[in-house]
Image 1 (cartoon, helix red, strand yellow):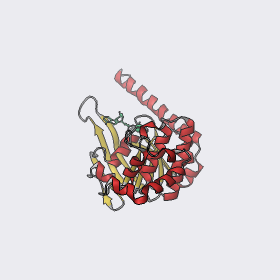
Image 2: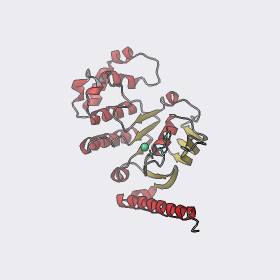
Image 3: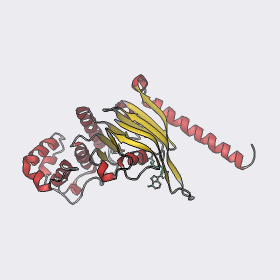
Image 4: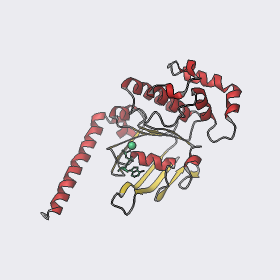
Length: 270
Ligand SMILES: Nc1ncnc2c1ncn2[C@@H]1O[C@H](COP(=O)(O)OP(=O)(O)O)[C@@H](O)[C@H]1O
Ligand SMILES: [Mg+2]
């Protein structure tokens, strides 16, 4: 379904700022897989999602989705197959447009029909019903600018928009990290509901170990641009938050050893 094969991405190659953000990452996801991605800051999680979404082209390797090899596709072409929600509640929606207009835009992703067409075809009723199920009172406020909503309300709407046309792939990049705990819970419940209902193939980045074990059916841990652990099947079912934290500790311990050895090499001790 999603095949990521030996991809590499280096930012600012050949300069002092060179960052090897993805080093030979391969992942193969069956349709309906809900993959949770964890890893330390800067380990390449967002870069991996961006590589799939086409924010930039990878230096090496291939990405295919369904029957399409999308490695060289532009971001807007991939957007017809891929829904995204970012960490920042202010990206992904147009703040001065009304809720209704934003939702109507989501209904015509990748289509030629105008906004008017969507609004005129009873779409409003369908949208109102859909957002009523959120229990956030948003159906009363369809004509308000989306910029007037709280972060949690916006993330809930963005999630509905990103999943409206049942994308081949849904990408969620720490989409609850900027929210207060109550809003984060609400958005996580909605995430679970939508993905379960539509059986969406999903990549979700989170730094919450609780979310990592409560959601999804596979967990990948990244480190320094590589996949360090890949848990699925019975191993995934058994895993607890503290087991994941332990793996973070191991990584940190190894980092400390590495830098100690580097320091000794630098001082010619070994
Ligand atoms: N557009 C970019 N330009 C330069 N460096 C980048 C860019 N995006 C990410 N990086 C670097 O790549 C590394 C991985 O970043 P990222 O994928 O955002 O990490 P994560 O999401 O796991 O915290 C980091 O060192 C980051 O600074
Ligand atoms: Mg990130």
